[in-house]
Length: 74
Length: 372
Ligand SMILES: [Zn+2]
Image 1 (cartoon, each protein chain N blue to C red):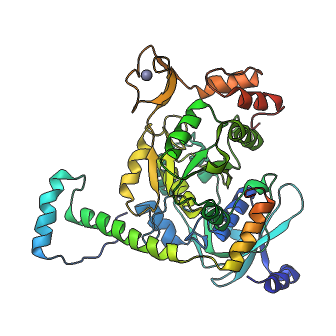
Image 2 (cartoon, rainbow over the protein chains, first blue to last red):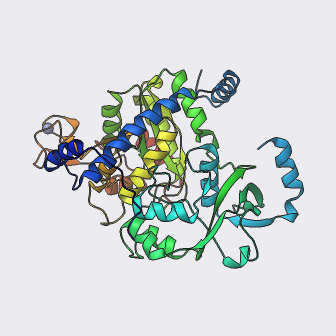
Image 3 (spheres, chains in turn green, brown):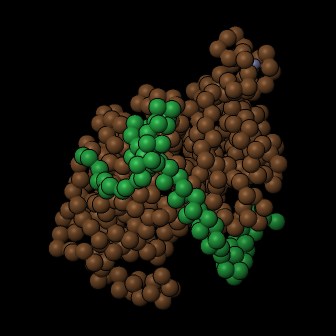
């Protein structure tokens, strides 16, 4: 079964620039290369957002207490 | 879900359709509820199911390689419609416990051959994972679950949840944490790999898989006691945490290496050790297939630490890997042989130069070693 794809537009110059790089990579097409890069970049952005979601102090204290009871912290 | 809602649901339990699930599926329920399988909130619906099999990603593009599914006898859900709630129960030989509610969002039939080919790379029913899939019911149901109660296994105190491991790592001041997946008691090679990785990060999470395994695999208790002994004698206490990953092995090789990494990322780890033939069985996967697959996932959010081989070198007089020792392949290379270690332990002998004597002794003291 083929996957679902949507088209995006790249400036001609950027497309050419990527095309020139392809022989030095494992990617067969510009689309594959761009997909890889965009996923990598998005992951970094999403990770930063994730890291900002901390626990409330109360929640953290409760968890610490449980970890202490289980012997994971002194 | 609040305690009050939980109570009301338990009170009205007789009015719900109940579905009894296996102890292994009950572990999936827990893993979903606690975020080990984040971003999943329930069992796979058809859109995600097909997306995983074709792209190794959820429909949201998040990497995911092994669908978490719930199969049912079609008769059980006849007459039900999307939006209906059902109760999931389990019983491990004893009393039936209500563990979760599930909102029925989707019910669908699926192609088992497609599943097997995608996840295991084979349709051969001699493969234990394929055999299991072929034995499943023909209908899958998907939808979000809400945990009501968990069945605590004999090793519950080792089963830290993602929130707990994250707080624990933070408390210890670890910013980088490498996870080690295992289903065996540690020999010197395992210790070498863990310590080589630990050298460049802040902490090590030893994270054995606890759950249903194949006949002849080491019992969970043996693995845990062996690691406790190793840590006690050979690891700095502040560098290591031992906690379990309660799940069933699929033996899906590379696809399972990705699955394992995602779970460890959710536990708060930054690195994941991938050895030779990770989660493999028989000769179904090449020894380094589980390394290569990571190239397709630049957005996994956890870094694989790939090891090719490690052995005892009699010339270096140390446990080494082919990256650091030039004497591999010759008379100086002494391999770690899981099979030999296993046989010697079963015979009550200490496998010298393969396993720490304290660890071996601890194992030998135990009466039962293997899954029957
Ligand atoms: Zn050497």
